[in-house]
Image (cartoon, rainbow, N blue to C red; front, side, top):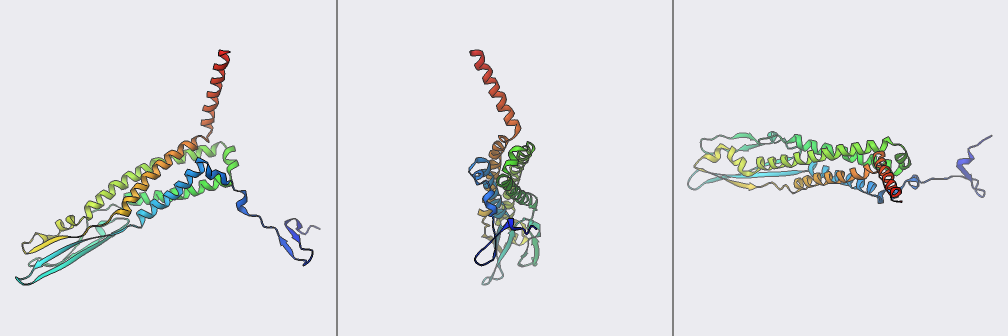
Length: 262
């Protein structure tokens, strides 16, 4: 009767059953990461994380200072601070205009909605991250099937081409959207929208200008992702049957020329 001893061994001294453990990482083809196909895919996975993190985690603040002259000896000073963050629906950001003279206290809002390019950029980053991770698993675990099944490299090439185009669109749209965000949140834009700043007994000035260093980096990572995916498309194409057919035709043509010369 079979007792399943093929998956375990007996310790003769103690009589204990010791199960043989097989490391699942030993069957992976780690050399794929040294090749351009796997190495660039690893960069795509990393750059997608950085693009998502730099855009999605942005938090900033813009502020103005309003000074109202109540009398010859008294001046009221108010600091108006407006926070802003991803996804940049600025019309939801409210701030309070202080009263001055005949002007009453009012609740105002920033202008503009730039959530569409920002959310598209972040969504694309998430999908690029997931696909890069999925492709790396295929390269490392199922590397033999990837080379044997003709459709798999072709599908990989088509998906890579689509991501290349989408990264160009997303980076360009988010770059334009970020420029519009900077204009809408500049202290001068807030000052021009407050009636109190038009009074003779009031003085308005810029307080804090938002720092967009992290958002600028996200745009750079967007274009970096575009160039990385474009470069990877070439190496994925070399794995397809289309490239092999072109190479075989070139070899046959060279052989024909060599035979004619002989």
